[in-house]
Length: 79
Image (cartoon, rainbow, N blue to C red; front, top):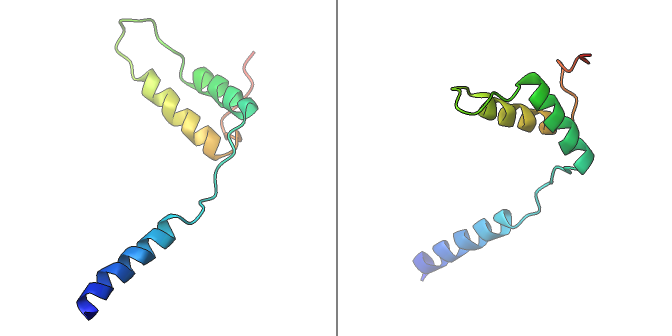
């Protein structure tokens, strides 16, 4: 009987901890636009047909920008 209670107890504990609310990062349209512009400025898109990794670099930069709430250390304003 104790052998059957253990898996049920473990399953109950896993469900209770997995359904706990996770803090969500608030991604606003303003933050997304700012980070997109910074990502493109930092890693310009190349013409089609060229071999570059600008797309992945842009995605990585965008994710880092959003995680830092748009405060990137190298965001100097270029003319």
